[in-house]
Each structure stands twice: as structure tokens, then as C-alpha cells.
Length: 334
Image (cartoon, rainbow, N blue to C red; front, side):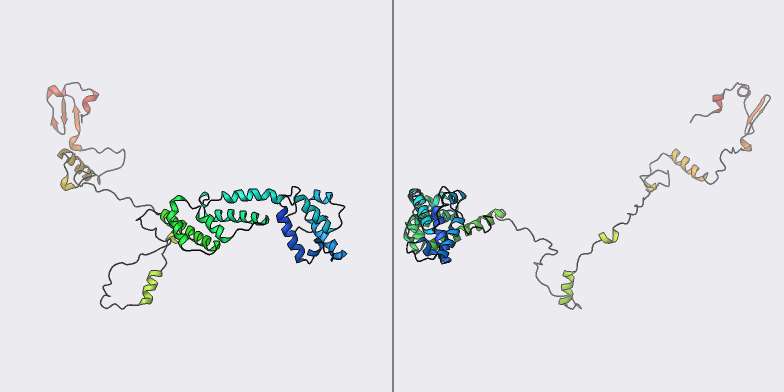
């Protein structure tokens, strides 16, 4: 139940490293609540104000410090004991702050904002030690710590005769931001290259000269606007889900002379005997009968009689007719 109300600022550490900032915050809050006289020696505060001031001070102490000063019931006594214990921190902070001020240089920082932050940190520590720096000292510190390559720039800033440090730092910050923008624009694309077109651009501007309208053609600005603003038609919705029709197979032309492909009849070079065979096959195409049917030509019947053999009615010679024939003799070599 001790931490029901959150502290208004950072509590005082046991080491006392934040005593100066804690002391300043405590004085400001007590003064805002009308309890500033409770930590002074005038003794004009009443018991109620002392109790409220003591509660507020103890709430912003470390738990170890609350235990160590548990018996103290007067806020003025508690304030004086804390001052006697930690007021020596000024003697510790002051040498370090003076050393940092002497070695502060603008050229050691990557940006002006970093230098400005470090400078005000040192200035605040010196002010806690009752040492205040003037604007003239801040300006001289900044001018004298420019980089050696910026001597001309430093002289130009001196000639402008800034009255306060805030005016100088404002100009430096603006110049730094401008230089960063120039570098970004330079690195955006190579020098001399054309910028990329805008996204979703659907037409280009006509760079040609206007030659007037054609005869019998009236100019309608509203129609031209509709022409350029007309949305593109997409075939995706119409053809989506439909099967593609198979492509028609185009038969190659056949030579009417020999029946082969790859050339025409007027350029055919097929031998004549192949042409005759193809033409004969075309003539016999319509005369084809049933399968496995043998057509017998009566004029070509070979009659075999004893000692009288004839083919197609023509008698054979006796030496041929009396010769013995084998199976292979009845087949003709192609």
C-alpha cells in the first residue's frame, strides 16, 4: 500500500548521483503546493503543512533512505540532513562538466543536432553548479570548433553577427537538412536519367502540334473526356471458367498427281511409274468389293489340260508346258 500514488518525478537514489536534479524538482513542487516555507528556517508553517511536506518528501526517497531517516518528523530537518549528505556532489560534477566543456568540438559530431544536445547537457550541469555560460561563449565555442575544411563557411557565419546562440543553431540545422535533401535527390537515380513514369498511367501526353479537326467533324470536349477516362475492358470476367476451344487442324495440301504432301502438282517430280500406280489406285477405289472376295477374270483363266496348257487362251510352248513348276514360280517379284 506504500506505492498507491505514483511519484511526481524520479526518487532520490542512495548514491546521490541525481541529488541536484531531485533537489530542484522538490523545491518546485513544494512551492507549487504552497509548502515551500516548510523547508526553510523561518518557522511560519503550521503542523498540517509540515506533515504534508514530510509525506511528499518521503514518497520521493529511496526505500533505504526512508528507513535511515525514519525517526525524522520535521521536513526542515530532513531537508538539511539530505543537503549535508549529498551537497558535495557539486564538487564532483563541476570538474567533469568543465572538462567536457573544454573538449567539446562541433567537428566531433556527425550532425548538428547531436552537437546541440551535448552542448546543452554540459550547460545544464554547469548551471547546477552555479556557473552560467553566455551566448557569446556558446557562439565562440561553435565557431572555433568547425572542421578545417569549412573555414570559409565559418567566416561567412561570423560575418552575419548572430546575437544569440539559438539563431546560429537554427541556421545550421536548416542548412544540414537542405544538404541531406540534396544528397537524397542525387542518389535517387543517376544524373541525366529520366524519372520513372507514374503508377497506373494509361496514356501519354501528345507532344505533336495540333493540326485542326477534320472536315465534318465537330469538337466535343465532353466526348474527348469520356474517351480518355473510359476504363479498359478486360476479358478476364467473360472468359473466366470457359474451356478453350481446340484449334482446328489444317490439313496440308495433297498433290493430285502422286498423292504425296509437301508440294503441288505443277511442281511434282515423282517418277512416272509411281504416278501411274497412284492414278490406277484412284480409279479402282470405287470398284472395291467386299473383303475376302476374289474377282475372277474369265479371259485370264489359265486352263490346264493334258499336254495342252494355255494362259488367257494362248497355248504355251511344249517345253514350257511340260516343265515342272514350284510354288515360288507362281509369285511375281515386285
